[in-house]
Every structure is written in structure tokens, then in C-alpha cells.
Length: 158
Image 1 (tube, rainbow, N blue to C red):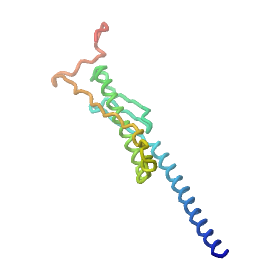
Image 2: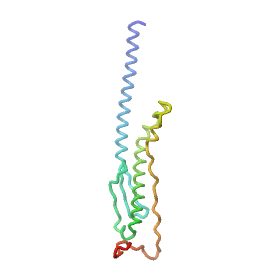
Image 3: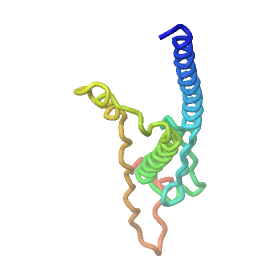
């Protein structure tokens, strides 16, 4: 091989490396945008009875809880607490699903550790799955009379 052929080959290889680096930079920028989009997702949920509204950020942190004006008249502390927990779980699941959807296109086709190093544990096993959403038990009361409000109870007897 003469010098001209070597130089042409080196130039072609440099071009390939430059193209690979440009692609990597583009993909990295796209991934950063997708990560920012995923972290900006917000989950919102309303309880089945409409008494509780919850907002949760993509990290699963509750950022807002609102109670309907009649919440303390139409429910008991125990039932309201169950409703709050279930509504937070629904909102957190919604936020996670939205964040996962924003990142999904960038997670396809990415090799896992066992693909590269046989016998290694999977990184996918390190990502926790969200807990199941627990539905509150339906309130039991006669349709003819409204449930007793805990606000009406006297003398500390619950």
C-alpha cells in the first residue's frame, strides 16, 4: 500500500469516527431531552368518591392534595385516609407510566449487562416495579340516610 492509499483509508476511518461521534452527541442530546420530559411528567388522580384530588411528580412525590368541601361530612377519618392512599398510588402510577412512555423509545434495543458480559445480573432487575394500587373498601351505609360525620362525634369516642 502506498502513502496515498493509506491517507485515503485514514481519512475514511476519521470520517466514520467523526460520524459516529456526531451520532452519539445527537443521541445523547435527545436522551437528555427525553429525561427532562420524563421528569416533568405529573400524575393526577381523583378518588372514586370524588372527595380527594392528588397531584404527584414524576419522582412519586406528592405535590398537592385537595379535599372536596364535603369530604369531612361524607366520610370518616379511616375511610378518607384509605381514599387518600389509594388516590396517591393512582397518581404515582400515572406519573410513572407517563415518564416511562417518554423514555421508552430510547430504551429499545439497548443491550443489558448479560448481553455484554455473560453471567452478569440484569440492570432491568434493579428498577423497582411500582406497588399495586390498593382500592379502598366501598363505604357501607343506608341510601336513605347519609353516613355519620366524624365531625359530629363528641367526647373523643371514635
